[in-house]
Length: 281
Image 1 (cartoon, one colour):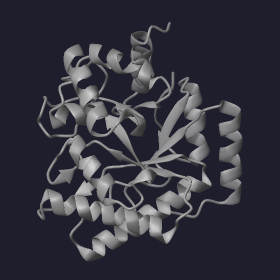
Image 2 (cartoon, one colour):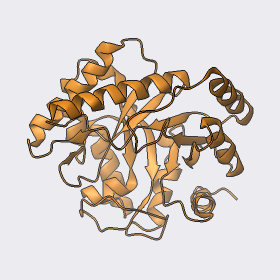
Image 3 (cartoon, one colour):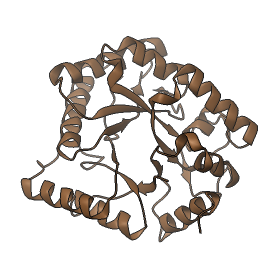
Image 4 (cartoon, helix red, strand yellow):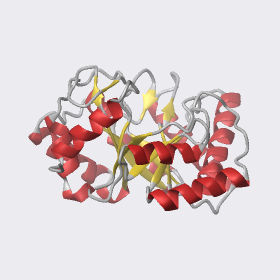
């Protein structure tokens, strides 16, 4: 089972692997740079060598990356969308240097221009990135969102629309997030609701496009469109439904990653709950 958590890169990306190893992670997610800054220091040869050595030693793979929260590939503001595209391009380049296969991103927000306009804008941004460098190894993983504000991606149809509009659609994959699904109105809190949601995902997008799952409980209720992560079993989803994801054989080789609040030893506690739900000791 590929199970892990989002880990800090404070002190270097290799430190995320060391911290993940302490928690018994078989996979992790990282930011390749500060998530709240546009610019980043260049990755040195020494940093890359240390990272590669620690990944080989720990056996933690795949490592998934998440992009900066500042990026909005759907922005109607010409300067901001250009800044976002350039920042995203740099993040893709950093992923390739670190041999990271997937870069997770919230698709973007239309900021009042309307959903159809915003979805096309996001596809144009993705095309811009691929046209500026055609030989990326890393692929983009569009994350299902809670639909907060004017954020797009809270319907499976949004993601298919982006893929259909993008010229390099084969380079685009998908990441599910349990908190986001629930907040968007997909009721995964019951077994029936879980199977209905996954069947709908398969029909609209296709399970073959799924490359990562974020496992987070939700502070807010079903359909709230508010993105607030909670510890496993402490939120509105409850503990039991996470077992549906963990035990689903179709997702055995899909990285499943915690993004729960970083409090005390709660990563360890949350991972222990998930392992118990999986039937591990």
